[in-house]
Length: 97
Length: 474
Image (cartoon, rainbow over all chains, first blue to last red; front, side, top):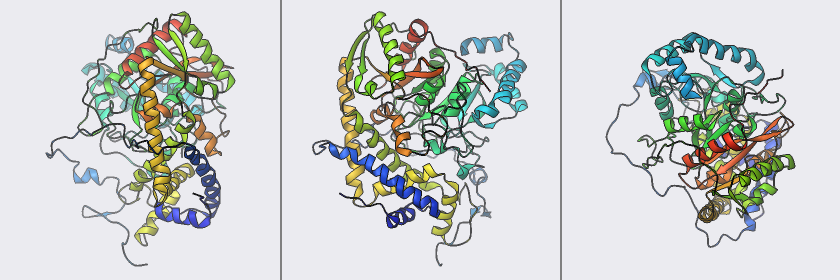
C-alpha cells in the first residue's frame, strides 16, 4: 500500500486528533510523519499470515466485586475545573458555529 | 543502604534536621544545573513529615524519595512535564504512593521527564531538559531522566520511574544507577498517567541492588483498582545470587547493533561473568529489527486514545472556552501539547484509522507475539539474557531530539521486555570517557527478584559499581 503524506492527510489527522497545528508544525509533521511511516513499513518484510496478534500481555483481567466504594467527593473531584457553576462543569457549546 | 539510613534516623545517629538540610542543600546547590525536579516541596513541610514518620516507623520511616511527575500525588501537582497539566493537582494518591506512605516514605519532590513520558532523553519536557550529572552537556536518558539524575547527583537514595519502552532503564544506564522494569502486572498502575497501558509499569530506581529490591517489595502487589495487576504474590527473599552455573544468553544480534565503546564495556563484564563460572553462550533474539517499529506502532496507537482525555474542560490547560466544542478542544490541545506528543497522537490516529488498522496495528501485534514466542524459547535454555541497556552513549543535549527516528532507535534494546511483559533490570557496567554504560538483564516472566539478586552479586563481586555519585562539574 502506497501512502502519500501530504497537507490533506495532515489536516485529516488534525481533525481526527482534535489538535490544531500551526502552519510551521504542519510542515514539520508532514516531513516527520513521512519518515516515521517509512520506519513502520519495515514490518511488511515479515510474513505474518500465520501469526496471531497479541493484544495484551495478560490473558485475563482481575475483576473485583461490583460493590460501591468511597468515591471522591464532589468538591475534590471538581478542584481542577476552571469553569464551574453550582457544582457542575461548564463546557463549550455542543452546537452552532 | 536504606536499611541503615532508617536505623540511623530512628536511633538519632543522624538527626532528621541534618538529613533534610543536607538534601535541600545539595538540591539548592546543583539542581539549577541538573534540572532533575519540576516541583520541590517546602523544606519545613518535609521536615515535619520526616519527624512524624520516624516516630511512626515503617520500612522507609523518614526516607526521602523522588517521584516521577506522571504519578499522582495527592495535593502535590503532577504535570507530566506538560503545559497541559502545568497546574494540575491530583485529588488522590496513586496506589504506589499510598504504599510508600504506609511505610513512612516522604516525597521530597516530583521529577522531570519527557512530556507524557514520550521521549528517550528528557528533552521534550515543557520545563526544559534535565542534564546528566556525569556530564552536564549530555542527556540523562529518558523518559524518567529526572529520577535518574536525582539519584546520580545524590539528592535522594530512592526514586520511582515508569517504563513504557525503556523509560526507567535508559536513565538508570546513563546515570550509573539501578532501575527495574517489573514484570507486567506486578505493580499497580492506578494513578499513573496513562501513555500506553499494555506496555507500561511503574518501577523502582535506586543506587544499589539491595535498595532497588526493598523499594520493589514495597510497591509491588495486587490492587483492586487496577484490573491488570496479578494475584500471584512474589517471594521477596533478597540475597546475593552467585552467577556460578547460571546460564546466560548473550543477545548477539542486539550487541552487534551497539556503538563500539558500549559493546566493548559490556563484553568486558561478560568476560568477568564467565571467569566467575557463569555459563555464557551467544544467542540471538531473532526479528530484533522489527521489534522497534512494532513497539512504536502499538505505543502511539494506545497514546492517541489515552490522550483524548485532555479536553481542557474537566482539568488542564483551558485558555480557550468560547466557541463550539470541537474548536475549543482543538485549540487548547494545539497550544498545550509539545511537538513530540502531537507527533505521536497524530500518528496513532493515523494507524487506527480505517484501512491502516490492519496494515499497521494488527501486524505490529503479530510481531509482538513473535518476539514473545522467541523469548519463551530462549528462556528454556537460559536463566537470563544479557545485552547493553542502551545501544549508544548518552547523547549530547540537542543531538537526537530533532530527528525522531534516530531518537526512537535508542530504545532498540529495551522495548523487547515491554512487548513481552517480562522483567528487565539495568545496572552500571562501566564507563567510557567518564560516561556511564548500563548492563541490561532480562529474565522470564516474574523472575524480578532473581534479577535483583543476580545484580546484587554482580555489583559486589564483578563490577564493584554501586552507590555512585556523579562529581558534578559546573
